[in-house]
Image (cartoon, rainbow, N blue to C red; front, side, top):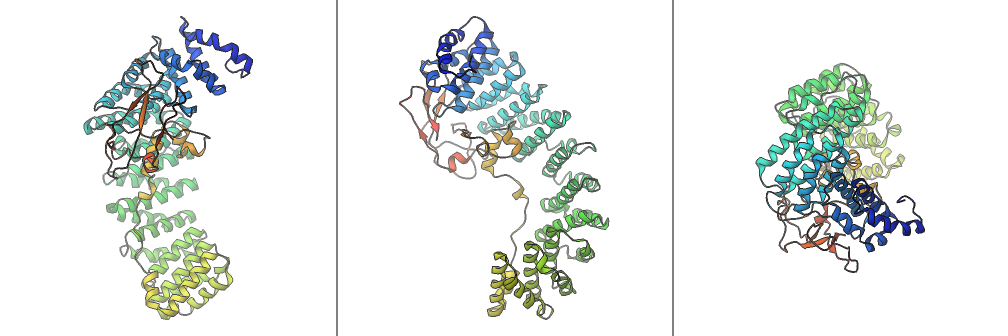
Amino acid sequence: MGYIQVEKIVDVLVDPLRHSLSDRDPYVRKTAATCVAKLYMYDKVLVESEHFIDMLRDLLNDSNPTVVASAVAALTEISERSDNIQLRLNHSIASKLVAALGECSEWGQTYILEALMYYVPQEPGDAEMLAERISPRLQHANSAVVLTSTKVMMYLMNYMSNEEEISQLCRKLGPPLVTLLASGYEVQYVALRNIQLIIQRRPEILKNDIKVFFCKYDDPICVKLGKLEIIFRLANDVNVDLVLNELKEYAAEVDVDFVRKAVRAIGRLAVKIETAADRCIAALLELIQTKVNYVVQEAIVVIRDIFRKYPNQYESIISTLCENLDDLDEPEAKASMIWIIGQYADRIGNADQLLDDFLYTFLEEPYEVQLALLTATVKLFVQRPTAGQDLVPKVLKWATEEVDNPDLRDRGYIYWRLLSTDPAAAKAVVLSDKPAITTESDNLDPNFLDELLLHIGSLASIYHKSPVTFINRYKPRFLIPSPALRKPDRGDHPYHSQSAYVSNDSSTPMQQQEQPSSMPQFNDWSYNAAASNGRVVSTQANNPYSTDLLQ
């Protein structure tokens, strides 16, 4: 009847629902708890006025674990859909829920574990104790239980101060995540997307398991690309030779997209690990010698980044690159090669001839190639005026008179005026030191990563997007401040909050407990967008079920 959203049916449903919530049969109580959540979607005021939320809270103390799981699922659903009700579990309720885990079905365990994300540890040791009790769920056969347990434990680590305890939990998280890779390809893909988030925060969890992410010949492309990204993130000075040999094998595969990603990973590896740069360059040169068109072009693109990372170290390979100019037909590869020629024009004897060859098709090239040609020609002129004096006027005329792209036209005017008024300033501009290239840009923003880690096992962790971007009226999750939340290195931010708790020993449906007015402590991973946005709490006192919310 909960699905029949007709006013008369709903009116008739109220009394039987109230009796069913206290029925002797646990199956009836379980079904009634689910019905309350359905009814809330149709008529929120009715559910609140009839005190059904009070009755759901009482079911958290039920002796039957299936009933407890259904009550938890209903309260969680109501909390996520309500504008004025926020579920917060105190330590007593959280402990009872964890005790019920062992007797619940696999989906009941998932509901309870999901609800534990609403528990905010207040005292030192609370998070450690709860995580230790949850850890046996990591051995469960159901992947949803494993991922949800992982999410809760990653969440609780934000409230832990004992580094030894955190290290022990990290060691426990590794094997279950590796075991997920023995499941079907769909589960593997979900696991890989979540692992990419987890190792950005806690790389030590899988630091010794890089071999399990090596690709198999029959893996689908989505799984291969996910494993490739994790291999790169887990690479370090110790295992770099092993990783490099594996990437070279991937570069000989038949899947073009995967080969490109593998070649690019070799270049990223050189940027990430300085001691391995020589070996990565040697590997890239081997791949260039294969004369496979797309391999050569991808290698030139990443070598440009290596040149920027390590200037004046690998110019000896430029001659090898120049031998493959005829193979370049992609805009990014052309732009990369042109950048190299312009940057090292003083060391390439025939740089003017090489650029002149590219200039034959200047007006037909994509704008990124045109931009690269314009800048490279100016670089040639400021370094070797006699070699570039014939090319510069021609390029500047095309850029300013025959091209419609405003970026290209404006850059052409700037170069023209610089060269005509102050050639020294032009040289200082075009040959200025470039910003250092790092692999840090591959990492998610720490605040955004905090948010995604609260959604492990959901679509947000697969898309790597906030749920707010694809779910209407979604209530964002943030780490809630408490005395146990550790201080970050990013500095303190004003943060005022109150926490509402579902309590088993209070006469009110949701007990409001005010936090100390002093500044809460954050750890290095706990600062989130709630603080930076200056979110405040509003209280809706006109509703008996309203609690303090992050608005």
